Length: 400
Image (cartoon, rainbow, N blue to C red; front, side):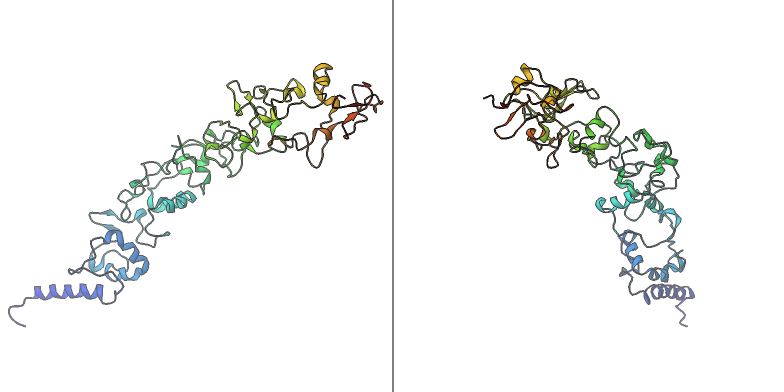
């Protein structure tokens, strides 16, 4: 051995050679090293993609257990960086695509199961704890809180005045939502579900697509039952809550938004709700102001039908004025509203301005004929079918 070469130098050269051969000989798929034998400068944020491609390539330098080996770089806990991998686990293949920072991509996944996200991105915490989602991972210095506000497991939807109006689409309610809302969703740092779902028994998880967690279907209040009994608008909440029915952002905003579909506007103006709970300019009420919500109609047919041509359903043909205004007959003296024709009934045309059931199809006066319409109420009617009795002989409806 030449006298000018020391054992120290030999050991150093050997160590360098071992390092390069150990990391390079069988690791041809690893990223190109720098001239000094190091990973690229952006390796901290990029190494996960290489690891997922071939985990064994990392073990050649960092050891079977990835605790450092010849590199002295512990993949579990690197000095100066703190704990690199959330939850104390070693490197592993991410259960989603990388990168995953696009909200339109990771948002639906988080909604599906936020507790699954917590396993890597959130601190430990059980029901009611509102765990932080701030663990450093890759390029996320503060984890999810790089973008989301601290201590908000979910963001408010754009335009929302409070809360998270999209929560009805959340999955795994029994585990994910309990992180903030407590065991049984009865409340934690977040409110209990029955704070808003007022008909929901405490400890019961709401069922997506049902109404009964907040109210009956339809709600039992006011005149809901009367209106919902009408086939045309039964369970069509948008008739009176236009833009706020089931599936709309306004449906769960904590406010009863009343707005009428334009097809229900009367001739006299735009349908609307008044401060006393009554409604005006509703076509199916003949433009007549309704009783306050929950009240009852007290004027029979005249509560919706008026004389003249002011409204779509006003009575004005033939001898209506004579019979109704002068003689004082009730509409039902001549019209049987239980009759149907071609599937149409009295209330079948509420959403239109025409009568699907022709009024002439409901006439029950004896001797009525639709040819040059006339009737002969002087003919003795069958018992119980005509309340007025004998009025006159055959007369034309036109007054001739």
